[in-house]
Image 1 (cartoon, rainbow, N blue to C red):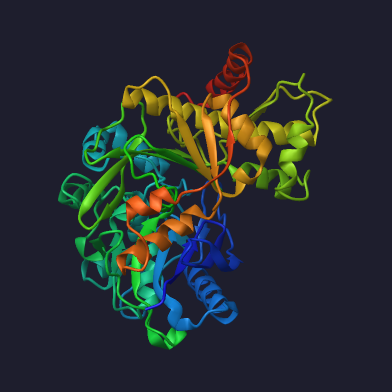
Image 2 (tube, rainbow, N blue to C red):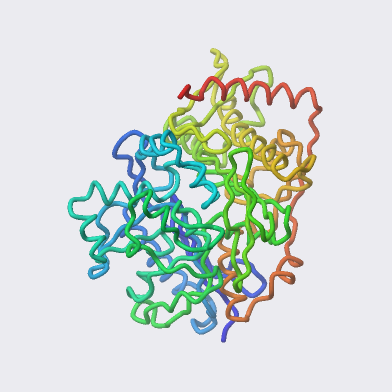
Length: 496
C-alpha cells in the first residue's frame, strides 16, 4: 500500500483535489470554480451535477499530473461545504432541483414560525443548533413541498437526500453507498447529538420521511470504494468530515479548549470541548467535532456567514479592487482618521445574533472615503465578528480569555489582517506552515484509517508554526474600535 492520500475539498466557490505526501505536504493540486446562482434575493443555489463534474475533473487532473504511481494512493478523504442540500432520484441518480446552499435564506419565515410556536428549545436540546435557514432541514422540507410529486416519491422510498459529502460518495461509488459522516449529519437539524441517531421527533417536526436519509458513519469509517470505471482504481474512501470539522482536525485541535478559525467565504470558529456536549448560553452552536473509532468529541461553534465574501464583493460588485490579495495592502494604507465600519450582513447575521433578516450596511462614509478605507472596513469586519464569537466562547467555557487561536483559510495569508485580528480579539494568533488544513484534515482521517499515517497524538506533535501574531494595540484604542462596531451592528439588526 502507498502512503499518499488524495483529498477532495468541495467548497462553496470551488472544487479541489489535493494529493498529500506522507510528510502532510500538498504535492499536486487541481481546482475548478463552480457557479453561484442567485435566483431571488437571499436565495443561493448550486448545480449538483456541476459540483460532481468539477470534482471528477479535478481528481483526474491530479492523477494525470502527479509524479508518483497511482498505486501510491492509499485512500481518499472528503471534506465539503456543510448544510447544502441535494435531493436526487435513487434509480437514475439525477437531482430533482438545484442544490440549496448553506447561505440560502428562503426558509427564514418557516424558521421564524417554528420559533414562535415554541419549538426552538427542543431543537436546541436535541441538536445543539438553533432554528435558522442555515441548516438543512427546512431546505429539504421546502424541496419536498415545492417540487411537484417529490413528497410522494420520498414517502415511497424513491428519493435520496444528502449533504454534499453524501452526493459525492454516491457518485464516486456508482450509487452503491448512501452514507454521511457524523459531523455532516449533526448540521441537518435532524440528528440527535446525544443519542447520535436520526431523531424521530425532529423528523416529525420538519415532516421529513426517514427513508430519505443516509447511513451515519464515523469520520474515519468505511465509505466504500471509488468505482474502478472512474479512475481505473478502486480507491477506498476512508475519511469524511464537514469542512469546519476537517479544519479542526487539520489544525490538530484534539485537546479540549483548543480553537481554530477558518477564513474562507464565511468564517467558522470551532472549539474542542471534549466528550460531553454543553449547550451554549450565548447562542453559539454545540456540534460534533469528530467521531473516531466510536469515540466522540464535541465542539462549540460560531458561524460568520460573510468573511472573504465581503472582499470578493469589493472586487466583483463594486469593482474597486482588481484582486482579493490587494485588500491587505490597501487596508494598511487607509486613513486612520476615518472611522468606517462595514457590517457585511449580505445574507443575514450568524452567531451570536442569528438575524436572518439583517442586511449589510456601511457607516461613517465621507467624501474622503476610498478603496483603501473600504478594504480596511471589510477586513476589520471579519476581525470584529471573530472577537464577538471568542467573547461568547470564553463565557460559555467559564475562562477569562483564550490563549491562542489557530487560523487557516485564504484570508490568513495577509499579515495585516492577522495582526489586526490579534489586536481586535486581544488573542495570540498562530498561522501554520500548511495552510491547506481543511483538506489536510480529510487526508489525515483517511491516512490514519488505513494505517499509513500517524495517530492523533503523533500528528498533533508534527503541527508546525509559520508565524505568530501578538496583540500590540492599547486597551483604549481597542475599546474605541469595538464600541464603533457594536454600535454599527445594533443599527443593522432587525426589530423582530
